[in-house]
Image 1 (cartoon, rainbow, N blue to C red):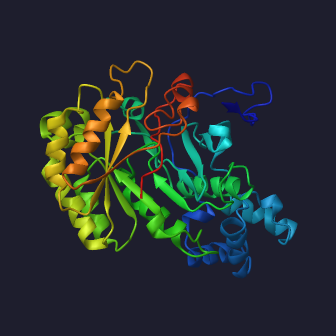
Image 2: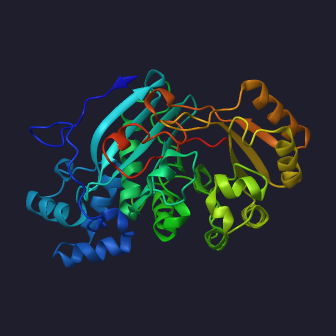
Image 3: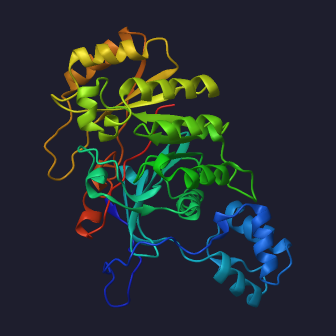
Length: 392
């Protein structure tokens, strides 16, 4: 594990965590607006509309988040536009790296003192950013540290996008060992339930996938949006005509156990959740990723593998098995490897595509369900994140 240089949060106490203020949404930011709205905002400040494109080119095209570096803008203009359209949304508190620099985790403080985390993961052929959509999470899944911390608030569109732009800048700097110098994938699998912050997450997706300079220009097919199964929002997503990957955190194929592991199942049962997921796959042609955290003696029995296989047989779905990552105070542990292999065998025998997630970042509490288990809890924050890469 490598502790990267800490950015001081106060002159006298570099690691000080101030008392959290009342949760509140941040000021307006360039990334909250589409290009037309940016032009209107710039004109409202008495500047020519073309300044909006200049700002957008710096931010989305060149990954420049600091107005001071936008030297093609006159100083007075730069200061005015920075104040009104480039406020500081995310302040790095701590950055860590592991996996020989291929996995990097950033702890952010938001303007109201809330804390969230992002993870950047490098692979030989791609770089993936795992971002948060909420500070904390209200879904209360008992095996996930995030869910046990509760929800502080939704993030704004720009707070989501700014995580990605920052991480894209890190990738572009060449800091991610053994990987291309370009961010190519984003997974909404950090802190929070993305579909519980639906309008802002969808707007963030559009900002990330609109070509530069209006947006970041990523492929929709390289964006993954996860959910624990908020069925009305899943059906809204179908109507959006997007081609993002939907990841459903299922974790149990039967209602009795899923009611306990994923409390929202008490409102929308397994059959209804899977129907919505299959409808999304049918509409988009995109294979749904079924996320399944394997928990020793809880959801790893052979009969549950067989039931899951029957539910998914012939469907446009892929099972992404996740060895449960340890979190402080948890009563559960990962399934033994022989049990995991048998679970995989039974699913594949049923004709269901299955992989085991290559868990990254355990050393820095950066893996699925871990992100804030250490640092955020110690800081008195509400929440944790969940990791990262979906097999695609």
